[in-house]
Image (cartoon, rainbow, N blue to C red; front, top):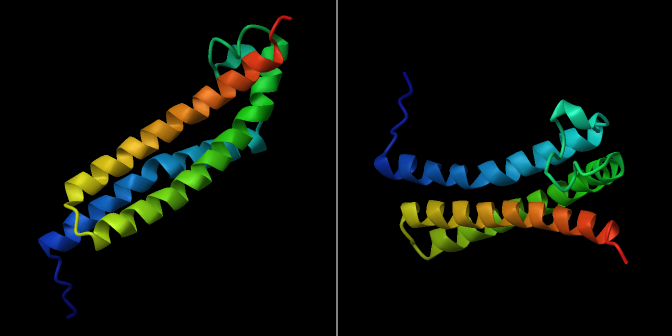
Length: 128
């Protein structure tokens, strides 16, 4: 019978997979919103923020731009997380620091995705 030795080190480094949750979800949500665009503002589905719900025109525009922003930034974040994990692994940084750094970067990029989408919506519908 084949036995696999699972060491503490193996378990600790498997925690680095946590760094890929945010980019995976961003790409998945972006793909889902692109494949199944939400037209009903009252459904509470889709890119649903106060700015996007100001009017049907705001809503439609938000649903058209949000998927591309989330897909693009999610892919960039995934590549950045791979690079970050490799660099921190080579430098022998403790795993808990690697996971904290990865999650922090993930949250910052997620906030950036919302910020970019909101900024584009506001810019398009500026009065003036």
